[in-house]
Image (tube, rainbow, N blue to C red; front, top):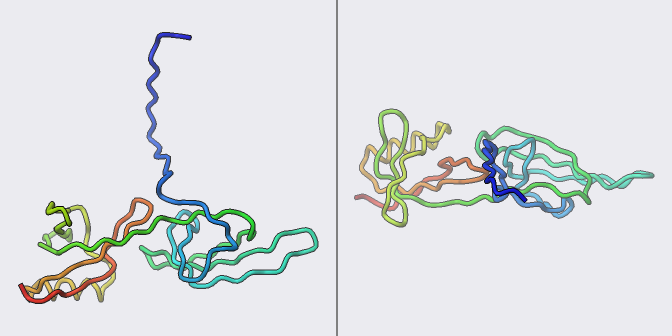
Length: 159
């Protein structure tokens, strides 16, 4: 045994808590799955019969929860797929900065200033109009695999 201390510098993230394994045959429509490294909501699942020597296969069609792009994957039903941990958190909107970032109030009373306005035109217009009118707005932020995005809006009345 040596007395030297070893220091390892790693630039990679293990990503252990971002996803969990689930058997492909148990993933249903409206569930979540990772397709090509992107968190997706499953919109269609079809299962093919087993072949002479093979496994039943599951064909997944998913929509990326952040970019809304359609992705597809085919996986043997007995194999494990990665399923993202998806969380939704509500924050009160405090301010919208000039450069497109929002200032949000967390449950603990701190501010969260690292989120951009959503790219969805409809939602973006609702947030800007509601804020301009001085309404109290609560935004829902979806978080999966280290990405966050505003996905919904609630009006809790005037200030």
